[in-house]
Length: 330
Image (cartoon, rainbow, N blue to C red; front, side, top):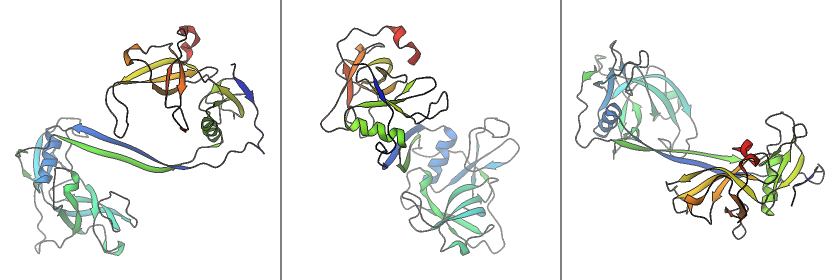
């Protein structure tokens, strides 16, 4: 069926204002070099380490390369667990997973013996109790695993009577059972509100139809629609129904299983140019062994139950599309 188009009536086709909570989460796993390994293992052992640069500065947290000269640095030193607040900001409404669940101050603390400041939380009764120049010390977590959270927070601290502070002293960086890798969870919670064009697109998908919008200038059809042509910069309102069949333009084989995704690996994720569209969308390919998926493969959507979007695309059994018919979309 050839693509059809119509110009929506603003009075009758105004989309419902949509919004939904959205969470973007990615557990980032990385290995540690000798400097970061020593720093995090030290925190587990209630020791704060920094690194001394060629010109004698002590950097805390330590880095592997001098930010001024790019020289590799490995000269580890132990600094004090007390220090001085260099600047701060009050946090009246802590978010989930922040260091404290009661209002606190974010502070930059220059630990004794260090020349740079460490960012962390300060447990204080209110903003009037915080000031630049105040003395604070580390409050260690009861259970420590070799992470920055081994510092539970900072707390106000009265200095020594004679005003003496701890100097940086050399440290081998050697510990029993060193930490060699970490997993840092990254998470973003927000409310997503699609615009006019994407609201119509989502409403059409609920009816198992795929619609894009045609640029009145270059005549390209964009799926999903964006409300404006990214090439010409003009508004798009002429709706065009495309597909449902399409062509695989390019693809990748996924070999790592994602958290909370009930799909066996390996599987194929592909860019698919739906018939009548000038922009490829991405979707999973099923119904065919992963090593038989290829560019030019003709596919069609597969819907599951009352799903609001295709679960995956499968081969139609048609001959592969000629490369010239989709090369501009690769």
